[in-house]
Structures are given as structure tokens and as C-alpha cells.
Image 1 (cartoon, rainbow, N blue to C red):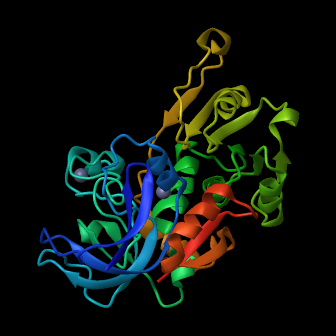
Image 2 (image 1 turned 45 degrees about the vertical axis):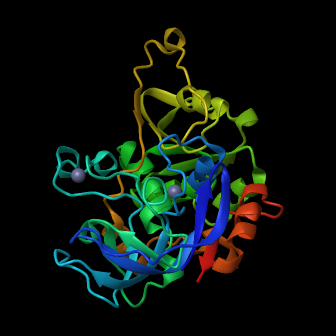
Length: 333
Ligand SMILES: [Zn+2]
Ligand SMILES: [Zn+2]
């Protein structure tokens, strides 16, 4: 089969053997739609030390179940599913508490430590935990982002422990930030402030009704936000995150940084902030599919370009350079 393989800071479309079941809890999925994530670019640039050379990239996708191991109870061949970007056993200390990102037998494995979805077929471990069935009225496009960026946005909003009518600031109006805004709105935030350096992205947030106020960092002289969701991942955005928070607010950090960050604790003293950080604990996929099915949230507008899998290297180039406005690219098979 064809697969996009990462090696020595390069990617290449190669011939690879079809994946087979290794454990009885595995499923083999025929990929029908996938996407490229900024984390894929992070791997290629060498910012993800745990990523293995020679791995097939990709962790955001929907597909059809082809075969399952004997221990898989909830799925059978032919089921249309979206797939969690995280692999988790469901039984360890962390899984039992919902902290699946730190599962002792999993975490972010697909397209990082084990072969991912930018291939015709992929093996998904712990299939009963990682797959979510798609109802007929949810299309592949509707569900493409459930297992990764929509879950990340939800995770960010959840970290802020939003109370009804809270003012929530989301730094970074890229795909994850936009998902965080729609989830914060769903959690009944009263006012959502989108902050980004890119006015095009801010306008998308405004035009889709996700943000009530849009600000660039230069004119961002607010200090009274109840919760901050930091999705931008720059040195400046990290500092902005604590500055705009009101005393006792929660700052939820979803972003992945390329450099270490430091907090000026003397200046922050007395503000009594709570910081939460994290790789997404993507435990709400079923709920998110239901919300999409009920048309309460929609991520359809995030797909700005579609490429065929044969042309995935061009898609990567476009996603990295963004010669035209681009939020997310869908890869068709
Ligand atoms: Zn991702
Ligand atoms: Zn576990």
C-alpha cells in the first residue's frame, strides 16, 4: 500500500506492507479521509523527540473498519468510524481517571511512535477505546477533526472550568483555537474574546459567530478575563496569557511550544492564578460526535482545501507555506 513515511526530517510517499492485527484488541482501518496537523510539521522539523524515524505520519482521520481482533467487542468490519489521536488501554491509573494522554500503554502513538493514518490502511490498538461509530447523518467531513483538534479545543475549554456567562479569551484563532471557542460557547461562556496576530483568522472567528470580540495583541489591554485558553504557542502569547487573566483565573495551555517558557513570578505575585497545561485527554469523542449530529457544533468550515492522497506531499507544502488562506486540509483516498 502507499504510505507517507517520515525519515531524517523528510517525508516520502513509499510502498509499505499492509498492516496486520498484532494484538487481539487491534482493528485495521481503511482510511477514507485524513488531515495534516501542525504536530506533523513539528515532527518533520525535529521538535518531537519521541517521534520514530521511518514511521508513517498522521493521527487525524476517519475510516472504515476492515478487520478486528477477538477482544474487540464494539466494532465490526464495515463500521464507519472516527479515530482518537490517542491510544489508550482504559485500565491503567491514568486511563481510569480520564488522563488518557498519559496512558502507560499508549498516549500519542499514532503517526509518532507507531504507524499513523497517512496511508491507505492503519492498525489502531485498543480499538474499543479509540474508535467512535459515526451515525448516518454525520459525514466523514463532519467528523474529521473529532479525534484531534476538536478534542483539543474541548480540552482547553474544559481546563478553564467555565461557569455560565464567564468571559473567556482564546489566544490563537487557528483551527484548535476556533474549536476551543465553539466548545467554550457550548459550555455557556457569556463572552468570547479571540486574540490573534492574523486579522484574517480573527475575521473567521467573528464571521462564524465563534467570537464576540476580536483583538490583535497590540490593542489587547484587557486584564479581566475569567479563563484563558492559550492555543498560539509563541513566547509572546505565553506572556499575554497570564497578563489578561483576572486574579484567580485559570489559564489553560493547549499550545505546543518550540522553546521553554518562563513565568515572571515576582510580577505575578498576588494574582493567584491557576495554570493548567497539557496534551489533550481526548475522552469526549462520542459526545462530540453527538453534538455534531445534533448540529450543535460544526467544524465543516475548517476544511479550506482538499487534496488526493497521491498528492499529499504537495498538500504538506501548501499547509506549511500557506500561499493562500488555509485552516485545515482534507486528504481524500
Ligand atoms: Zn494533531
Ligand atoms: Zn491506560
